[in-house]
Length: 555
Ligand SMILES: *[C@@H]1O[C@H](CO)[C@@H](O)[C@H](O)[C@H]1NC(C)=O
Ligand SMILES: *[C@@H]1O[C@H](CO)[C@@H](O)[C@H](O)[C@H]1NC(C)=O
Ligand SMILES: *[C@@H]1O[C@H](CO)[C@@H](O)[C@H](O)[C@H]1NC(C)=O
Ligand SMILES: *[C@@H]1O[C@H](CO)[C@@H](O)[C@H](O)[C@H]1NC(C)=O
Ligand SMILES: *[C@@H]1O[C@H](CO)[C@@H](O)[C@H](O)[C@H]1NC(C)=O
Ligand SMILES: *[C@@H]1O[C@H](CO)[C@@H](O)[C@H](O)[C@H]1NC(C)=O
Ligand SMILES: *[C@@H]1O[C@H](CO)[C@@H](O)[C@H](O)[C@H]1NC(C)=O
Ligand SMILES: *[C@@H]1O[C@H](CO)[C@@H](O)[C@H](O)[C@H]1NC(C)=O
Image (cartoon, rainbow, N blue to C red; front, side, top):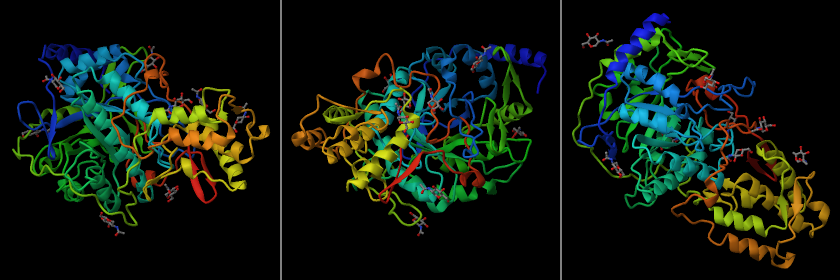
């Protein structure tokens, strides 16, 4: 660590650099590269920027995935404090893993914009705000969360990209979830287009075995229609890559260079900076920003500015004083600064190459996702359905994350006993089959199943209790017309359309707390992500329950 005196001197020097800069230019994608407004290539030379939330020490959470988050982009004083250090590093982009749409981000976003720093914003949140890798769905609650976050950030000119997920898939057996990620990209992309935003749509992948990572990457950038359409393709593929450890050689990247040599959209390292052979030298930077890697990749984001604990050890390049006013940099910071300071952006190749969207990889035993994607989640359908149900989930707590899973287990089990099933709420990304209620939020799915049981038992009052969690809806249609009413709400369950945020999203938001808490179902990572193969062996904290031959896990 540097002495405090040194830090003060550094701050003063850096402050001189913070001179006025013109409006930050739009970065666009053409083919597999990113371009500045003047037509030169754009490279991400960035750093992860997110104070780490609470890290559960649960033995079932070997990734040490955070269960809460701190929205660093809502901390204006913190961003002002950190700007000189980000400028010393010479970064042009930061990545924020979790943001709270109900908070004000003006100060941070404007501070960074004026300094020419772009932001990459992850739309997902810890625990129940991301696609559940153990039981994936693309549902109204996630879509609404994503749109709400986009609405909070669309007024800023320095959002480079929105990520629709981070490390959702961590092993070949979970690749069916790619269908839901691709649907999330499709709907996010069409929404951005509808509001006139030129921000890109990205995803950050765990590094992994090429036998599934390569088809996975190709699938997220492919066209399902055979008409060279990018409608379901990402704009930007991130790889969380920690292959270069210590003072490695360029051959460390030979395999991934080969795997992405012919890729059709921009790819970059959404995280890099291996800590297993300390000290970190950051000598990979010179390799990443030179040929041949610049033909294949568009830069990367060092992990991480703030301290971040992981199962591999401690990341982070600065420490913040307990009163949040002072930054102390480490030697790690100084070395990255030297390496980043040496980077000259190349401007070749001058043409983007192919701008086509290839056909999608065929599913096989190591890549499971169907090219039949889930539909656009439809709030109106789900709300209509819920109001038509004669038995409804009426929790006595607003924190439903912990009880929905066990209650679905119970309700689907009971339904099975009366020859019913939970197929309507199930989504299967491998088969490409999506039940008509599968895009509804977990609470409405539960209401639907409770109601199915209530109807199957001829509306006997005791069938609509579930330990005090369900209530009979006296406004519902009669039993004779119940089925028709539900069907009319779900008249076009396979539809794809440009989504719009529900009217209720303004004011008190479903994510209005700065902590994305809850305990069941830990999905993709928050601030600390890992790519080592040991971590990939880990289990996911999810409420998994089996019903009549199917496996369901909802949070
Ligand atoms: C960037 O693109 C947006 C949306 O297309 C546009 O409104 C804005 O003026 C552009 N910014 C610059 C600096 O050209
Ligand atoms: C994948 O396999 C691991 C064990 O290797 C298991 O724990 C996990 O639940 C499986 N995931 C899925 C989505 O089947
Ligand atoms: C599945 O297909 C991918 C290419 O899409 C390939 O890399 C992988 O080896 C294939 N797996 C098997 C088991 O054939
Ligand atoms: C410092 O900032 C963190 C969030 O980054 C916050 O949780 C904490 O309360 C702050 N401490 C003080 C003394 O302001
Ligand atoms: C920066 O580049 C110069 C000239 O190529 C080289 O001599 C120096 O070692 C480099 N420094 C770092 C930290 O890579
Ligand atoms: C996550 O759970 C909390 C607590 O139940 C809820 O308020 C919030 O809406 C949920 N978020 C999503 C995206 O489902
Ligand atoms: C609701 O369901 C949960 C989970 O099964 C259970 O713990 C609780 O006792 C039930 N009743 C009420 C009133 O919350
Ligand atoms: C929701 O309930 C879970 C499990 O009881 C708990 O861990 C979590 O802190 C709760 N979240 C909120 C916002 O109260």
